[in-house]
Length: 137
Image (cartoon, rainbow, N blue to C red; front, side, top):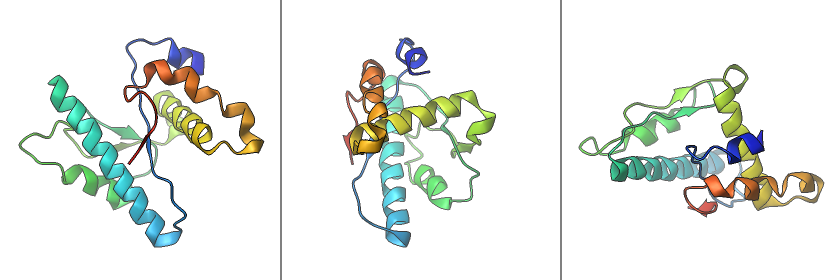
């Protein structure tokens, strides 16, 4: 699957992350902050390219913080034209591809010994990384 992704010159991807030891409500707030930074980054890239986009993500839409991030974008320049569209990954091969990309980035950054097999996955995709490498936000 990673070879499929790496060989698609028209397909771009990128990763943002935050290192934290938070749990519970503080973790949820940090996750929402990181997602908001991602949304700003995507919206800015779309604006620079003169394009519009939709964001499709894994999940059921019960976490309002994802919608809040989109609604906080300035309407005058907003290029992400809708709130996120949620789809469970088992129903979408594209969402599954995004999941494996996120998992490979996570393992590349974490480098837990028991997941050594996954460490080289993200570097294989780096040719597609529009940010060059995972960006801490």
